[in-house]
Image: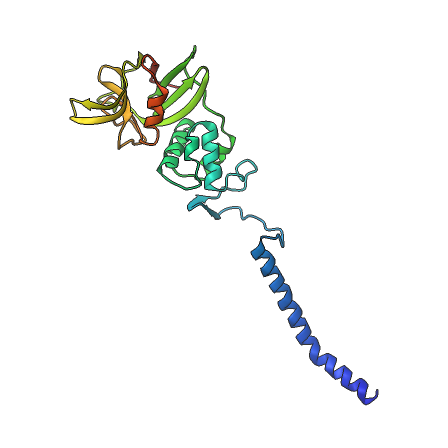
Length: 256
C-alpha cells in the first residue's frame, strides 16, 4: 500500500468513532425534537398501575388499564360524563377540579353504592365509564316531580319518566327524620326564616309543614339535618327553579 492509501486508512479509523458518536447524538436530538413537537416516536405502553394524569389542575388516579375507562383521563372528560348522566350541571363543565364536581361525584357514588369520597378512584372511574342515567323509583311518573331517596341520600329531579338530575342531599338524622310519604311543594321562598333555628334558609321549597328542600352550608354524605332536605349551594338554585308550587315530592325510605 502506498503512502496515500496508508494515510486514508488511518484517517478512517480515527474518524469512525467520531462519526458514530455524532450519529447517536443526532438521533437523540431528533427524538427529543419530535417528542417536543408532539410527534409519535415510539409506541409507549401505559403501566398497569401507579400512573397519575394531571389535567386542568386536577390529579386523577389512573385505573388498571380498562377499555371502557381509559377515555376518562382528564377532568373535563370526567365532568362531561357526569353531566351526560345528570349528576353535574353542563354549566359546571370547565376542566377544573372543584367542590361542584366533587359534589357530583359523591352523588354518583351514592347511586352506585360506592364509598362516598368525592374523588375519582379506580372503582369510581370504571363504574362511571359503564353507568347509565338513573331512572325514577316510583311508578306512574308524570310531569315534574322530586324523589327524595332517604337510603341513598339523593334527590332525583324527574321530568315525565326521565331523571333530569341526580343531586347530593342530606336528609333528617335518625332523631329528626324527614317524613316519608307523598307531598307537594306548597310555596317557594328565596329566603325563608326558620323560627326554630333563627336563621335564613336560602332557596327553600317547603313541602310538609316546616320541612323544606333548601340550600345549606353543611351537606355531609349522610343524614344530618333536623328534618329538611339539605342541598349544596351548587345545586340549590337549580332545584328551586325546577320546582313549582304543587310539584309532587315523594320521600322514599327505600329505593332498592
